[in-house]
Image (tube, rainbow, N blue to C red):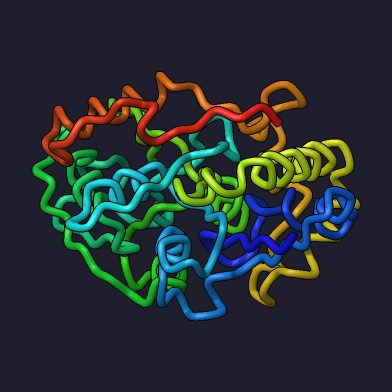
Length: 296
């Protein structure tokens, strides 16, 4: 069967299990021909979740916010979470060293390079407020795939990163984890699909998840070989990143045989409640509305 996965970013350590599963034949053994779609293909014309809605992909990697956003837009679209890549949040708001920003409240009147996600800017402003600031950060919207570069090159002061990727590239970053400032951030990235695919392809979904899990567990146990597989797919700039450090950082968050992919419903609930409490989203959710539990 032919299946398509839309990545949330250009190939990086978060995707290692997919590339390993593909190269090691884990998908092939289950009769899956997987196409992995990088956002470079259309320069992020469409988000990963939008590609599912437009039937350009069967699965997408995206944060919890994308599911909420697609469920609450003017013409709602039913996205479902299937599995999480990481058991805990390993993202953070980052700034380069050598400036006066030492905590979130220092971002008042400073610049933030945004990806333009629906709730992103409001979350950043609330982070600043939670630390005693006013939330008066200046938001800018660079070309999406170039957001990180604007901070790495000191054009803007801050942005949202993954500690196991940009944090490995620039190990001397200053960063602020949301959980340290009373924001119970949820899962990112999640493997998602549509209600239509769940109705029509449930057995295919389970096989895809099974092979994917095998790829990530293999990556954890065979770091050198897996790094060499991923390296082939990286952009020239990303090939400078120390993959050994990236996978060593990531491996404890991927989970193990009995925990990879598993979603704790309380993580969803606390984040939804926080969004409602801070009036970032007015609609509340039953967890069953956005998450389908499958054994794989």
